[in-house]
Image (tube, rainbow, N blue to C red; front, side, top):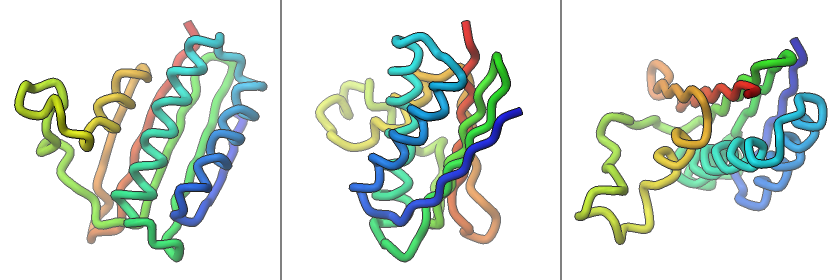
Length: 137
């Protein structure tokens, strides 16, 4: 199992560091281009949500990205230090009433781009944890 870790402050410009990490990881993991693009969309959506919505762009708060993989499966964990939220209460961006809303699409998009997607609010308001699984096909 190969493991990678990145911790960034909650500044939108740091999304480039997340992209660089995932590019390095995939150079070893070897997703085909189309699958790599889908994984990258999911990871950057979740990381940006962690920065903007989770940590409210407070640069003293951190976003942590853990990635581990073997030759067939990649697990990506993204954690923030925000208050968390109830994922069941997120509006469906495909509903007619939400179709023009510019917010609320990140989780929906990320979930569609990976093989498995999990979310948990950490106990005591200790942030959010997103887990994404990508399998080689």
